[in-house]
Amino acid sequence: MSIRNFRAFLFAALAAASVQSIPARDAAVSVEESVRNRTGFAVRWQQDAEAREECLRTVHSLLGKPLTMRSAVQIALLNNRDLLMTFEDIGVSAADLREAGLWKNPSIDLSVRFPDRPSRGPDWEESAAFDLLDLLMIPLRKRVAADHLEAARLRVADAVLKLVADAKRAFFMLQASEELVSKMNVARETEQVALELAQKQHEAGNITDLDLLRQQARYDEARLDLASVESDRRGQREALNRLLGLWGQDTEWKVTASLPQLPSSDPSISGLESLAVVQRFDLAAAHVELSSQVRALGLTKSYRYIGALQFGADTEREKEGDHLTGPKLTLELPIFNQGQARIARGEAELRRAERKVENIAIEIRSEVRELADQLAAKRETVRFYQDEILPGRAAILQQSLLRYNGMLLGNYELFAARTEEAAAERKAVEALRDYWTTRADLERAVGGSLSAKKTPPSERKTQISKRKP
Image (cartoon, rainbow, N blue to C red; front, side):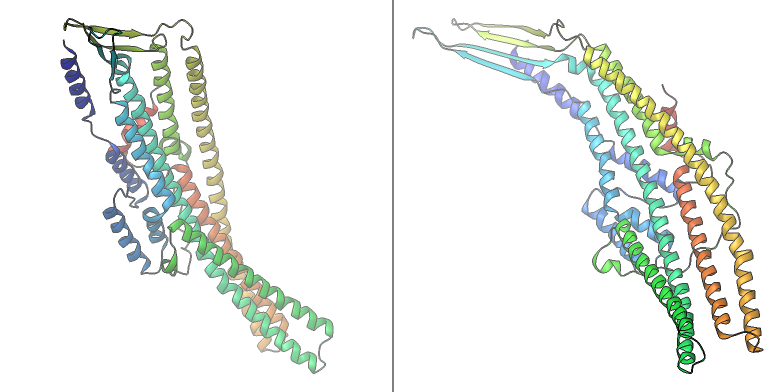
């Protein structure tokens, strides 16, 4: 085979090898389906300006109405820049997969040697070679790169679920702050009325300086509490703005004022640990990375004695005009480096991947148990406030008002009863807030859903890969 024909063969093979589809879109669609099945929310990989503009129109449409928990989460999934950056990991890994399926470019050497006597013509020598070892390693290399793409897909899905939980938590915190500002404002107004009455009584000589100072202190504390809650509300609003990816005029949204009521019941906590181990994307990604390490180590061991293997053709033109053409083989002799360091490194990375899987599984189970226990305790706290403490404080205020109308109770005792009722209402709001934020954390710990669902086709590959060694 002449050098010209050999070049044609190499370039044809290279062109054939490069005709591969990039599975990035399939991986992104899988993430979108998994999130929709787990949470009911839509997420999208925004690869071009048209997709970005469409998502922005959806965001602005949602911002035109008072934000609910669901609309806030949906805006975050479409507009959070950190999530959009994380989505690009799929594109990077898909490009690596395509690169893994391509041959290395062939190398061509050309040399010209000129004689020391003019009677002789120059001596030409050409050679072309390609890396045969690289060709043999393509199937295994592609499997490792496919594992990396799958792990990237799972990490992106896990980042989406984390953002869902963070947005829910931030929204519930802001809703609670809105209610707390209202409750604390009532307490401040009550103490203000009491102070004004105390000032008039002091001017008339009916109360002492000490009584007036005590009432002034209570009023100042109420003002300080209100200012603190208002500061928290502003901070929580900005925290939600960051999660929603909003700035400028888009930050002028309004939020629905009240926290959701306590649901009649919670999903059964039995089996949540097992459900979390099945559903958690970060654990699935760790399993895929472990499988990838196994394959990478096998690849290293299989070709440990072959450092370089090149095959090609060489041609030389003699001074008489004849051409000498023949095959060319370059082989690296494994005398000094037999891949010992690469194998040791691969074994260490494999052990590290195994420990990572075990650690994530242990942390997931512990986190689920802890949050499930907290959720049950916070539900009981909310119910106790709603069933016992708030009705009791309302009854105390009602009885105090009756006694006040009968001139059996003084002004300050009535004010104190109203202040104590407002304080109980504040703690009830905080308890309900803690319940909903804990529930959002538990949903995240379990993997996006507190109830087992039929495994969608996009997630079956992940569960199969987790059972591989």
